[in-house]
Image 1: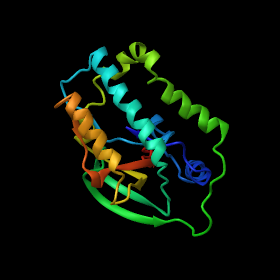
Image 2: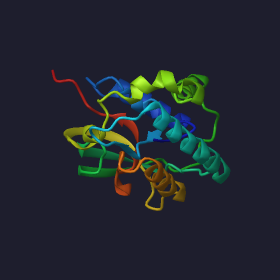
Image 3: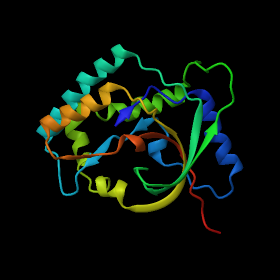
Length: 203
């Protein structure tokens, strides 16, 4: 998972407005309450040992420093409405671009509530807490088949640009060297940040 510092405040406002304006919208999934891009998932049938999880954490620590030095800034100029056939969004029925209003980019500080939630999520993967985190990692629910099995729903996302940072491919290669065959990596053209799933309750 590639994670980001936070959602810009206008995106948080948009998410709140969607909840107010779309009747019967399902509650927001925990995974979209903070910004991240799922790069891949464990191969079905594979489990990580504590030592393997520590190895993965070391790789992440190395790349955290590299990403911080590069200071990559993504400009959100449009979102995408997607009707998808699988949760990885590698297979889509429809993608409709939704240009955002032109103007100055909002660089205002993130809200304390938003930052506290992101810090809570990140803290679960702290080196000192890995043993406690291992049972969550070893749950069977979110293997690669969860993302690639047929599941149709609508969502609002931001697609990563066609030219993606080189550290994504470098990270994948390093994980493959350390844990060969453990992970299924998703296609670059499916990589995205979920803004808000748009599933609705039946009435």
